[in-house]
Image (cartoon, rainbow, N blue to C red; front, side, top):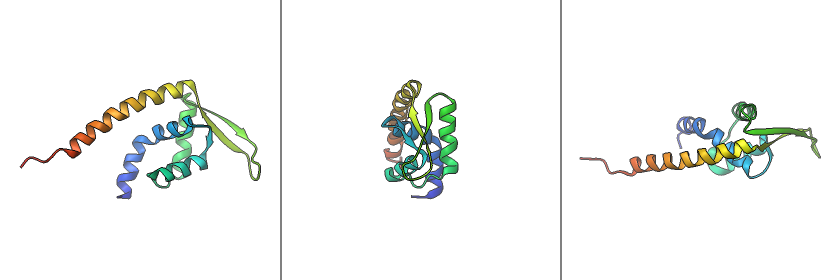
Length: 112
C-alpha cells in the first residue's frame, strides 16, 4: 500500500480506531500502537498517537491513570468513558454508512 495514502487515510480514522481499541479494555500507548500495527494500520509513532490520546482525554472520551510497571517504569493507562462509548457508537454508525458509500462508488463500473 502506498505509505502516503495510508497516512492520509489514517489521519481521518485514528481517533475512531483508538476509541474502539480502548473500548475492549484499558490499555497504554505502546500497547495501542502495537494493536494498530497488528490490525494492518502500520506503525503509528508516539508523536502521532500520544497527541490523539491527550485530545481524547481532554474531550472527556477517555480517562487515564498511572500504574506502576511490574518490570519497568509506570505506564499511563487509558479507559473509555461513558461519553467515549456513546461517541464510539455514533461514529461507528457514521463510519459504516460512509464506508458503504465509498465502496459503492469505487466498485461502480466506469462509463464508456
